[in-house]
Image (cartoon, rainbow, N blue to C red):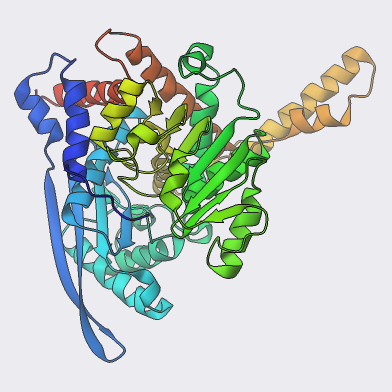
Length: 473
């Protein structure tokens, strides 16, 4: 699943999509240019001793917008990272945060490295050194710039970065808020690991609550039984596919990974595939599906829902004509290029864009950041009070009816929500409300003919409003 050849760079592709939204809005050209422009990008190169030899690593951190602080965005460790990719992802973060009403600016970071080539101890030294460079140059702090996990990074790296920041700024009592996606035992929040994938599922469920949108996509009502192809069984793709498989009675008919594609028209158990990958490091040899080394062909399988959850530029002008999905939910960042998007729109394929669909991660990151600054877990003060009130309601019902309430009723009424319940509730509410804003924008003008343009219209209006409020415009 490497990069396809394309005529536009990633950042150009994003900007062309933004331009399409700007063309339907009456916005001063100067302010439009200000919104699109990346504020600042830092490039750092630093030496680290590995096995007795000095290696020099290069990384970037880009701030697309600081109209809201802190700027927010993940750090990826990958062998394909470059400055253009980091700036494009930073701009997507700006629009993403605006769409889901998370009060952050947009940022992104990347380190040019192949993590699999290094030991755990090597990765710790490299990560801490990269963090030190960003911290000292003002590109990482709880107040101004807050990273999170991305491709090639996770809770482990976030814990190392947090500890590095704490040692450099021992006076900052809010040091835990310098990154999100940390281990729960070290300031993280339950539900963050699954957040992006679960957010994808909430987006899909909300789409299927709107019969007119489902019909316009050429689909029958109801999510149950829908045929799904998912590309990428990493963190995002796994949780999205597993939830749809287990909770929504969907049929995952194909799973695309870097080494090929698994196909079974009768459905594939996502959890079994994940276990197979954990044991063997590959999807090859999985017994309950047909395997093909031509993973890219999996994108062209006829299905109801296609979920590209791997990386950018997977659907391009070269394969867009062959896509047979009714609706595409972009779980990855930028999986459909601008040229491909144009082809798919004219073919009538519904695309629910990445800036909305994969916003679950930054939404729950926001919850984690707020929790770190508040220095208290969600639900700590009210949970037992809610349980006591629920118990009194049950007692009142039993007193009025003269009957013993059923066990399920007691559990539902007396149960007090814990932090994970509240996180999932907040994420669900965010994805539902945000979709409704996109839908309202989509139907507000004849000039807006797709959900991607609608999403950028929603984001740009909010950003312009922020500029007006602070007197920039």
